[in-house]
Amino acid sequence: MLNTGIPTTQWSTGQTGAQITVSAPGQYTATVSNKCGTQTSTININSYAITGFSLTADAISICDDKPDSVVLLASVDSLSQSPVTFIWSSGQTYAHVYSSTLTTDSAGSYQVTVQDSTCLLSKTISIAGMQCDSDSVCIHKIAIPDIFSPNGDGRNDTFNIPHTCPVYAFSMHIYDRWGQLVYESTDIDKGWDGNYRGRQEPEEKYLWFICVQETATTPNNCMAGTLTLLR
Image 1: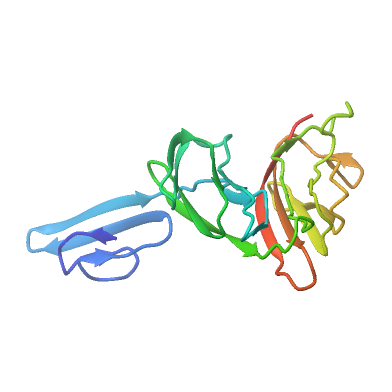
Image 2: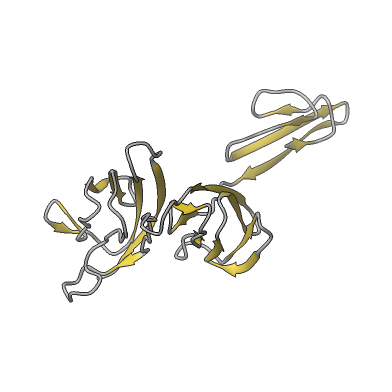
């Protein structure tokens, strides 16, 4: 909200009034005239964003009667901004960091808020419970790595999605920083080797979208995050 306190103010947006509300970056000018003359005042509104904010979990279901710990991971891009503060809805606060985890054994919705000196953003993730009738029930453990190095040394050469149980449906899409789709798959056992159309992709951060459906009757659980490629 921009405010001069003078009802006859003429704004560069074409509006007249003591105040206006703006929602886009740009230059805004207020002009006030009376018998003594005319005065103008200009303000620049800059855009700013917290980049790479993601919230994921390493399990997509837990047993109601035999709790299985779930680790929630919140993170931001560490290459383009200063450390931030993470505030969890359960009360934990972690300041001056790029990532934060919360471990829980209860189903429910969990919110994390990330803030710096300029911005504040929030994300929420829901952990669903299920009844486990026996020890043979398979609980999915999906731990998504945030870095891999396709350099041919036989270690961490592909971006894979480790899991402990079969899945009914799976999809993965990976995009570069320009929004170009560089990899997609519907097979959870296949990973990305860091190539696109036969050429090596550069060292940088990539955005992934993953959806997993445990059975034909369970909902599709979708997640998003960032991945760093190093060679």
